[in-house]
Image (cartoon, rainbow, N blue to C red; front, top):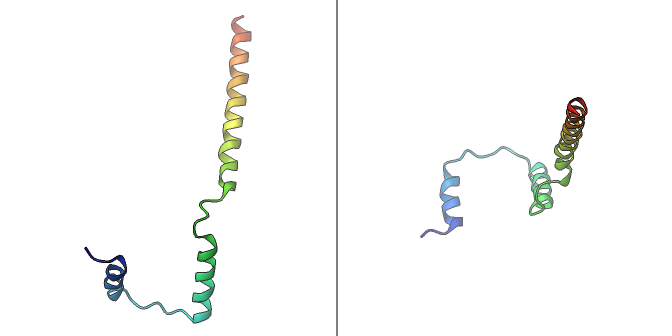
Length: 71
């Protein structure tokens, strides 16, 4: 079985060389290393939770009005 690093090096031979200056490459690497292993941001749950609250409130109101109409 091949080592992952060797397999990656074999794949990299066929890829075109990226034309990036050193400063940009270092900045990109620094930002990636900061985010590595942190997982997705918790703020992504705000809108789905808000939508769920609105739906539950609307369904509760609708059920209340149907019970009021039938009762």
